[in-house]
Image (tube, rainbow, N blue to C red):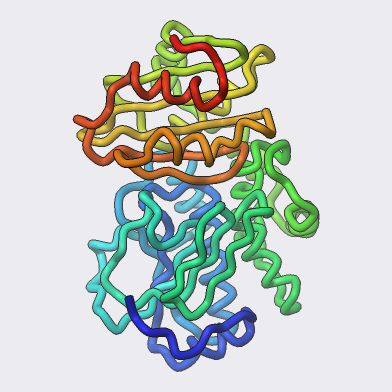
Amino acid sequence: MKEVKRYINKITDFIDFLKGEEFIFIQTHNFPDHDAVASAFGLQQLFKHYGIDSYLVYEKEIQRDSLKKIIKDLKIDIKNKNDYTMEEQHKIVLVDGCKGNSNVTDLIGDEVGVIDHHQVVSPEDVEFSHIFPEYGACASIIASYFLNLGVKIPKNVATSFLIGISTDTSFLTRGVCEHDLQVFFHCYGIADIQYVTSILRNYIRISDLEFYRFLVDNMIYLKRSAFCYFPSGCNQNLLGILADFAISLNEIDFVVLCAKNENRINFSLRSEVPEWDASHVVRHILEGIGFGGGHADMAGGVIKDSSYFNQEVIYNSIISHLGLTSL
């Protein structure tokens, strides 16, 4: 762990801290979603306003067609880290993720900043840490910087912000705070609303329907809870969409979906019951075999070695933690 000589609390001071760099990297979590890309893009444009050059990077892959379309249409230059030569002295700012997360790879470079909205422990070895779990989307935090600094939000950035906020808060129905609403309505007057509407309406493909069918046919119900395992795989972003679908059912208040992807088991959880904290549940069930975290109403996790996964043991651990009867 590096020794930090100076901790920075204000975004203005952090901007001054970065001004001497030739360029920096802005890193998202490994499988970036709409909020992560919007956050990285917005921060890049804010830094550009202050004369700081930056490159947007991620470690694994972009999985959703709608996100690929946004990147192309809004001219967002984000690339896999393999497209760059990253060196130890290069400064890295993490957005929509935190060091130590299972979904954030420790890339070569010097992590100097973390901007996140998940329930995580603030790392001690970065100069700037803005972690606000009360925000429904990381894009809202980045947008608030523009508003607080009096910097005009470009139309394409505002458009990406609206999409990021809408998707991460399930259309302003999940984990929303006053700050999310403030930046949402500010961006609404700037963004291309027709484009935003088109993206939000067309977020699944015909090929996704087989996963919906599998979910409907194989979901296990128990006292307002639902569980489903996809042994043949389901990418992380689609797994989250399916979890949102399952929690939208009137009879369901808690959802756990998991899928085997290569040698990993990915988890996506949703909760509508305050005493069933999804982030607490996923950390509990994966203790000793994996990692997890997120929010009370939305969380995720991973077991990196699928040999540690036992479907019956995991399910019984979940329902035991919820105080339900074992399967």
